[in-house]
Image 1 (cartoon, rainbow, N blue to C red):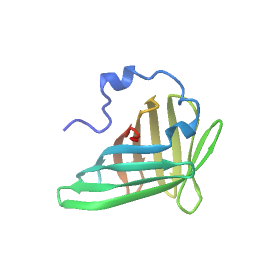
Image 2 (cartoon, helix red, strand yellow):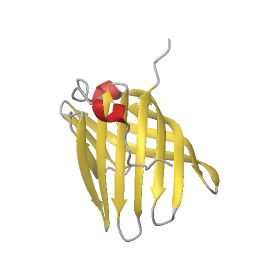
Image 3 (cartoon, rainbow, N blue to C red):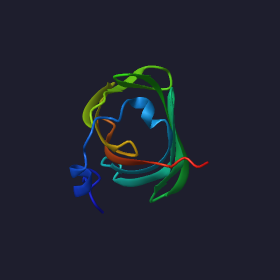
Image 4 (cartoon, rainbow, N blue to C red):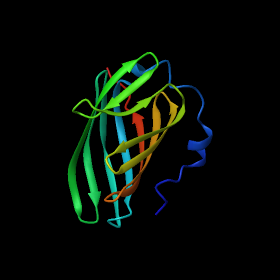
Length: 154
């Protein structure tokens, strides 16, 4: 299996422009593919589904697969967009991370004893990659997620 933190040559070389003209350009429907390596639990997980980005929220729904089977999965974050970026908030409104307009950016979030270190690479208005390394006394995992826009029909 390819390491979860590996980025393809095309992913590394196609970083071009700032994050479109603003966060609202990302409103829409997206396919989501995530690989997660749980170093403490010695597990490899895969998520496949869709994300719906609205002005005030991002909701992911899909299936999470592991060696033990498949289960439905759902994730929700609140969003607060402005001309300079977006605040990503937990469902209760507490702060998770702030994303600016750069094509490539790093973020950090402390959650109790856990440290979340993330990297966002916005390849275009239609594709971005999100990498997380999480460490703490009860968590140690890495995840790589690819989002691709689903074209609007109509």
